Length: 312
Image (cartoon, rainbow, N blue to C red):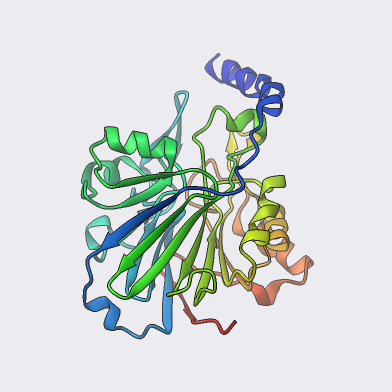
């Protein structure tokens, strides 16, 4: 009965969502974050890494910054709550344990859902850790006691300083499913990370999709942020009640590549929970059919992609 009611609510919201669909503002607000300098900035500023931990969790290290995305450290067999009485079981283990994390400068959270910010993280993450997320997630995090939250709307940006290092994080469009479904799910954002002293001409530009489908607003991303060096795409073809798709499947992932036009793409968020219905093989097949194999880097849990500064 609950599933039937939820399905009716989700489907019935489509017309209302279409009528009220907001237009993203042309410009956003600017926030700032000052981080304490440390010895990490003495590392080679030309080399960076992305380590895939599992689901949408990666550790990004570049120019002295260490960034953790969508932290999920539950283990195989554990369950997360997705709302409306729905749960999902994890099928994999994270590549590292939460307690083995390196010192983190900030957490980048695409949205507040159990498979992106699980109960273990909610309990054990240091409350003073800076967390960058949506406005909705920011309010929930404050209620949990987190003291350095940055809730951002589309095109808002956060200017981060750490010693001589500079990073700009911009909130990009994202929608967690079709319009009628998205209004009943947490708001979601993509992110563009511009590393370097001049973020308008960055040393390296990275796009993280968040749990979104490909829709019209996504086309504004390459217009505002051309020459994306690396895209991390949340795939999996997640389906609510086994029917309603709320994240990209393999075909959507290739469409996203074609719209955003990154130089390299790393697929993530594709096999970790039982609500993920589109395995990585779906994406690999579509990539091959589109002739984009040279543009994709496949990482197993725990593996690392190394990148360098881009000449522009």
